[in-house]
Image (tube, rainbow, N blue to C red):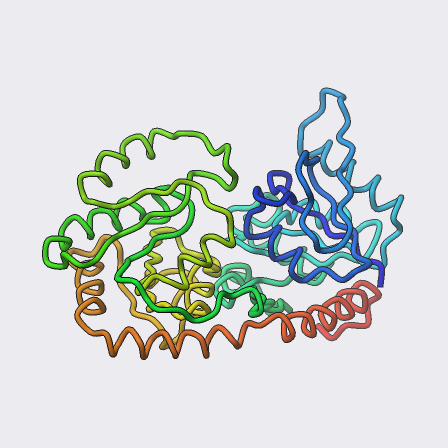
Length: 358
């Protein structure tokens, strides 16, 4: 099957600059897949064959120019299926010309073309819609009639996970350094409890964006002195492989998101690396971790501090959660994900031909 995958306009398909969507696309891509999106200057990710879009210089709205460039690429490649990530309006437009599968990685209620129940109903009638978690699917179906929406969970390449190694007494946050991710709550919690655990350290890996050229934001400028005072070591942006290495060494990984995570790749990777994990009870995070992690709200008084102390005080519990986490993460392996991908692609083509069961 000839498949054209369309990335969101801001997503980079370059090594060292890729976000979660691009990494997932590369991980799942079949050898003959063509991936398209904004032009890059660095080495592309290894999955599929990347072809940059040729964006018109005409003074038109950016989303219109992006859509026309995608249509031009589709006419050149002549795919059996177009897969569109996180852009409902673009998916609906392209469905006029070829079978389309829409993959949603975030709350669709915030996306152009899917903000109202009527818009979401129309999408579900025209193309196969998939969400990366039950939470995303429920958000898509909210206030709609019966809809056919599939769940396509994110996945990991278990072979890329570092080997088990001795654990350091380190508490780790890894991800985008923004308020939505609860980074300031992590710093606050560590400042509160650090004096009780002199043998432990706290590390914060990440920046505002993906890539070494991430800017210094007002949030980061305010956070740095607070982190320094709390004794939290900030590494800045780090490549994905380095983050996995850090997760394989850290005793505890914290995912204190305020934002309703539509999936929670950081939590999944931390479990695969065998760390004891603490996550927020919001979005899809509870579904992803199951019983293999502790839940703690970042802003509930004492909740995150209490969860950290509970784990730091009990080595046996950390070990138990690490083992449960590895077993849980194995359910999201690449082999299962690729088998499901092929099935969903066939369903999407059949859906477009009108032979799918509503």
